[in-house]
Length: 115
Image (cartoon, rainbow, N blue to C red; front, side, top):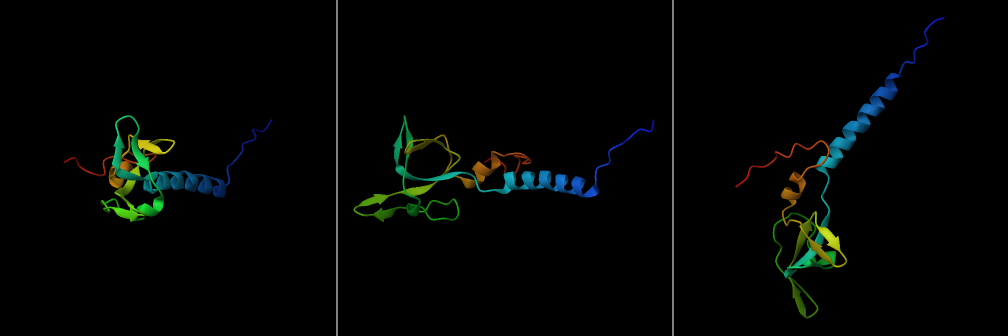
């Protein structure tokens, strides 16, 4: 009896390989989870109070300064990779670069030196 052997088509191999490559690239280069928080609201038990995204500017990780909303000034900034519980966020970072360096599938984690 002749041995029957299944051959993978080259298109199947190429598409499968591209899927793995895409997953590696997007998980390493994608924007980390972020929440807009009031830096002045820190509570030792709860962390930072989450405020509306409109209080944070959409780009960069540098401190933006306060924005006046109604009669209250909110010192809002993006807080990355936080644990969120209701309207509070804790255990995150204000540094986007640090959040990205925490890594994911395909990331080396050696992107920046300490200092």
